[in-house]
Amino acid sequence: MPADTLFQYLKDIGDGQIAKETPDCSVVPYAINSEKNRTTITNLENTRLISTTDFFYPLIEDPYLQGRLACCNVLSDIYAMGISRVDHMLMILGISLAMREEHREIVTREMIRGFDDCAKEAGTRVTGGQSIMNPWPIIGGVANVMCQSNEYTKPNYGQPGDVLVLSKPLGTQPAVNLRQKLTSKEGKEGFFKGKAIDEHEINDAYHMAIESMGHLSRNTARLMSKYKSRGATDVTGFGIMGHAQNLATAQQQEVDLVLEALPILNKMDLHIEGMHDFAVAKGYSAETSGGILCMLEKEKAVDFMKESLNDYGQETWVVGQVVKGTRKAILREDRDIMSITESFLKH
Image: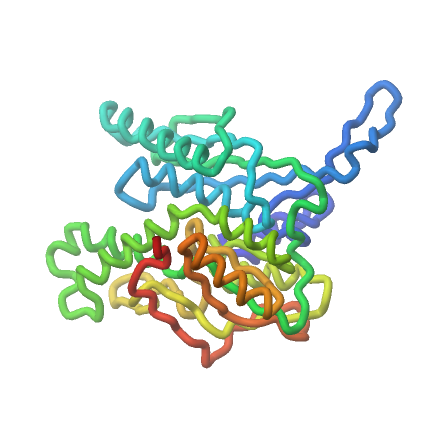
């Protein structure tokens, strides 16, 4: 759903502040109301309950990996708050009515297994959830963590002079869609003949996209905390520009987030005739389990990126800067398109 439409629906919910201060997660003070004397116990006044939810339809061919991607996508919002631990998860599951029973059993079991294995890798566990019968298979969940108010990165402290660092490349949506077209009847009959992209390039982008989507951003969250990030967002359904705008809107100071470079999976910024234009180079292509876009002091960003590469084997990119402004996200017309032709994970 387009961001503007969604926020119109949300404006009458609660106090109208959903996603205004913390664009990725629900963050609420945790207090216990005593029914006996109608007072609030204040020994938990600095404790926060942080939670998020997400679910979606299959993107790829492997149900086990689809379960893993769904789990990574749910956890990404928590990691964008600079929190590298999660107390527990709930699983949302739609069991497909459109599949033959023997296929449904395999797909459902493997999606659950992929989600659960990823949760264990993240140091958390699935403690419950909800399942329904549905035409399409769906998987996703809820993540919760309780922490002190000084344990998470508030997203709204950007300062002029900060730089914007992105932890994963862009272009996952066109990569999976091009792969679907390639393996379809139309693709096998020569749809891509004479196009500016070939089968090998599509497969390379697809496999890099799976690697990116299936990579937990837990280490990025650790580095955000260590290097005192001034705020961050994960890049998912609204694209990098949509999420950058949400982050800009939440800032306490009057600043703009200026994007000057976009690291994009090789050729995923092309518009292929006969296919939807995902507008990756314009920053509006949806991502699944995308990278963390974080604001860092310039000097700390150097060490952040060096440690990410040397200790965790993960390449990151400076993609812009924070400047004085009016709380807008701006994509420069002369932006640098960085073509990512090999894994951003080095080991």
